[in-house]
Image (cartoon, rainbow, N blue to C red; front, side, top):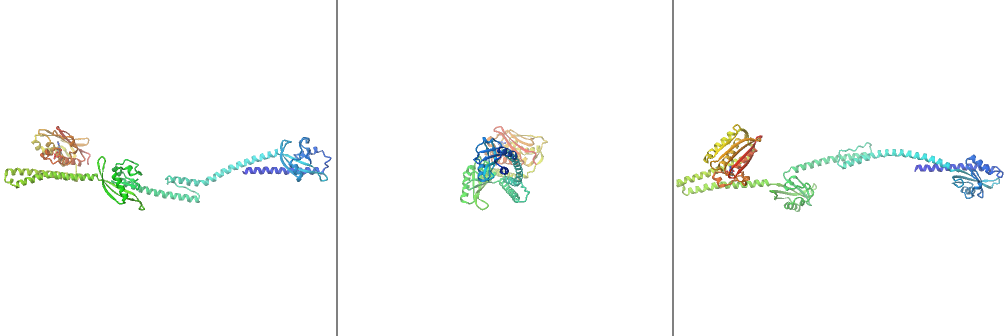
Length: 566
Ligand code: ADP
């Protein structure tokens, strides 16, 4: 714009200047002509002369507009000039200027015209000087080029300087914007640097401080949440919280396990979507509806019955506004199981004790009622009483052994022992019983075999197995007691060729008082506790016991005790 303005100003001043020069030239010509006698002049010569003097086209025009003489064109060929603006103005105002196209010379001209007076002061002609504008246009073109170059040059300078100034002004803002962007993405380690001391610096300082405080707070919140998470996840109890719309707010791993939830996206879903157990849904509803804590026990029937103790309460936020309900699940299946085992044990023990006690009581009554006076029968009755008392004694002994094993399995000490003598001493204890049935006992054991065992317990376990092998075998059969080391395990075995055990009894064989044929067991003096004791002994030494039996062919009991035991 400045360029356009400068150009038009320059062009105007050029024209004004040229007009003024032209006016001064017509003044001079006019004065010269007025001072000479007009009648004696050859107008054509005059205009040619002044043209060469002034470098301007000179025209003399009669008042009628007729061209009398022209320095560059034959006057006879020229139009009447009465209508030319400079001529009209010269006649009217004494001076006229005009810029236009000359149809005569086919060129733009700047004209200046003045009236010419004779000696009497009467206007007789109009003298006109014309200057071709082509020259002016050339000058204008030069000037415009120079202006355009100057404009371009300054524009470039202004752009460069402007860019530098704008950049230095915007840089702090960009830095702040980038910082704010990074903070919004959670990158609080970034720091906004501001060199200048102005308002932007104080904004940057405030943002840096805000980021630092946010970072610290988020750290604290993160730590607290991690701690809460760790506490929740390490709890043995299941924890489940829902809001008023029964949407899950929180569920820990134990709750997922107890309730059998595999949905990792349970959070935010409704209770109905995730847990299809109606008792639990009702329990939550009851707490939310009544606003009081509740406790109940429910049984979940999945693969195995699960006993759950559930305790629920309202859930409140920091401002004590109720959010929903919180329920804690306790899997008490093991407790219930132990409870059942205890009840069963008491029932079994009572039952086992009851039989001999009743028998003893019956025979004492019989003796009192007079049988005591019949020495032959009295002797027999006393034998029966003694036998049952012995049985009671055996049951009590076995129960005491079991109780001891259950009580302190950690205290069992292992030591390196020669196994062969241990097996021999057990066999000696039972040899008389085997002989009664003409059963032979063979030992298959390297005499130098040594292993880490608890001698007394192993004697008890092998004794029980050997006792059973004799009890549940026909006469004249054979029993093999073996020992050896296999895969870092001491392997002890008692194999008989007796009655055998059918498969359905094997899973329950080691339960207390479990007997396949109660009558035979009792007859043989069994308490039903022998294998339970063996199992406890083996467990106490971190070992396992296996049974392989074919009914009618015999039974193999194998004990494996790891030798890397401490
Ligand atoms: P019990 O005092 O009745 O022998 P155990 O616990 O020692 O009690 O054995 C449980 C039951 O397992 C026995 O009643 C018997 O029926 C069966 N049993 C144990 N050992 C053998 C065996 N070697 N052969 C056949 N049956 C056996």
